[in-house]
Image 1 (tube, rainbow, N blue to C red):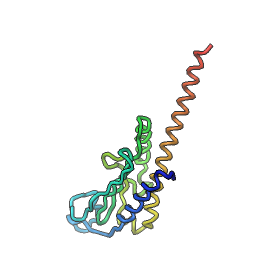
Image 2: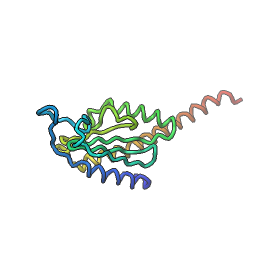
Image 3: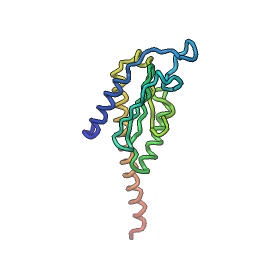
Image 4: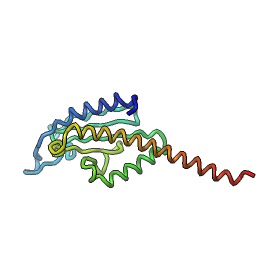
Length: 170
């Protein structure tokens, strides 16, 4: 982990750990249903204020806690057009496989790259600190993957350009 990211990720970790105090809470509209309140958004008394932790305008995390669920939305750094395309394709690839990640949502919150939905069922069946570690590790790995893909695209472009320009030298 880079030293520039450590305070940012530590703040996300502590805020997410505090927000994951979830309990089983039945739906107030339909009996015997338990839906994530942060997703339905109908009962404002059980939804807490969202917390936005921003490293800069291009990189942020929004944590939306409620009584029985937490939605974590991550905006991944996209400093140029190449990173925007790479992030969009990579997120599309991951969201098609969302069922393998258990907490990953198929559709992100508008303005963010990807979203996680953690419910009380997840905190009851998994260790809370492991869920937090997964989200933090996922954020770190996405940054590494996008940087690696960008370097790969740049190096392939350089090789292609060199091969193309070789035909013009005599």
